[in-house]
Amino acid sequence: MWNRKALVQRLDAVNEYEQEPIPQNKLKGWKSFLGTYAGEHTAGTEFVIGPLFVAHGAGAVDLVSGLIIGNILAVLSWAFYTGKIAVKTRVTLYYQLEKIAGHRFTTLYNLVNAGLFCFLAGAMIAVSATAVGIPFDLPMPQLTDVYPNSIGWILTVFAIGAITTVVAMFGFDLVSKFANVAAPWMIMIFIASAIAVLPRLGVTQISEFWPVAKEVIWTGVPLEGQSKFTFWHVMFFAWFCNMAMHIGLADMSILRYAKKWQYGFSSATGVFLGHFVAWLASGILYSLFLLESQNSLTFAPGPIAYSAVGIAGAICVIIAGWTTANPTLYRAGLAIQSINPKWKTWKVTLFVGLVTTIAACFPALVMMLLEFVALYGLILMPLGAVIFIDIYLFEKIGLQSNYAFLSGSKLNWSAALTWGITLVFCLGLNLFGGVEIFFLGLPGWFVAVAVYIIAAKINQKKAVAVNSKLPA
Image: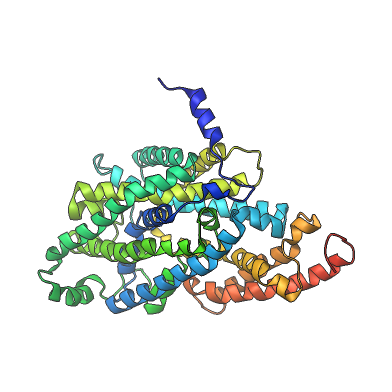
């Protein structure tokens, strides 16, 4: 019999150490991170991003070379940037940022952060819904769709959202276990399905693969209405598609559990199995779908996988959506909970899950996923630069780290100006310089570093004269 009191007690007992460093006895080994990264990054997004490279006309040579270089840069960013900071501080991004920028600023940042994570998790719930809807013959989203197209679609999304939210409510342990169970099976499905459909594309022996890849799958010709992708688009997207997680430091929330900073290299299981093998595999499935259906508007991962390998493909899409949505909801819950530490994390995650599920009803989240992923990484990037410089450089140049904590300030204007000026710079570069959103992160990071150092020198020089807590 269902026991509500026992369930609430168990949820209340979940301690995610939101406002303190992770205790030594709670640190985790390689296995937790290998599974988490493999599960999260061999997931629902892969059924969308791989086909979008086909739709945007990425050539075979540009795609493979761009993915290899971009993914290597992403792994190095996770290890040497996020991993080192996470293990050094053992706290969440949100708590570390509060010590630097103050509670008022962090509240605004966390709301923006949580909202972006909700939209990403919502896109993954929608991906799962495209597979769940197959037996019910639901009308599937089209490349041009923005709004939900049926009541059945909304009901399906809410069912998937409920399951995803419950898993995230139980904290990192259950999220990690779920990923460890699901990831190996999903990876095998991706690989097996791509290999299984190759004969239908004209590949009957290994030597035929590359010519077919260049002429049939990744032809270099975009679909009507889609922009053209080059090597540079692919490389920078592979590097920066998870900018919020590594350079933006959102994965401090996960890697703070790591025994060593080198566990950041565990991200390689995700990016090379997910952002390489799975992107290529899903691109193969989509090219077959285009070839056989002659329908360039339908863009639903569930039917695409189902048409290629049947029920196993559809089930893989469902699980894949969950394994990305679960840790993303977990991060969103931590972001909101950090606004008021008295709030129970599971209750916050329940609320966040509801918002996410509502967002998932809108197919535009899936259709514009490449641009959205680039945008949310760009928005969160400047504060990753702020934390990096605050931890590793400030003491060396005579500036005080954790300024808001030591001064008692609720708003560190240095951090606020850095965020605002960097984003305005990137917007100007996009609007007036014609630089696409995929390329803005790199120059933006250096602008954030320069602005933060200059603003902090001015701000702290004034503060020393009136605040005895800060060293002269």
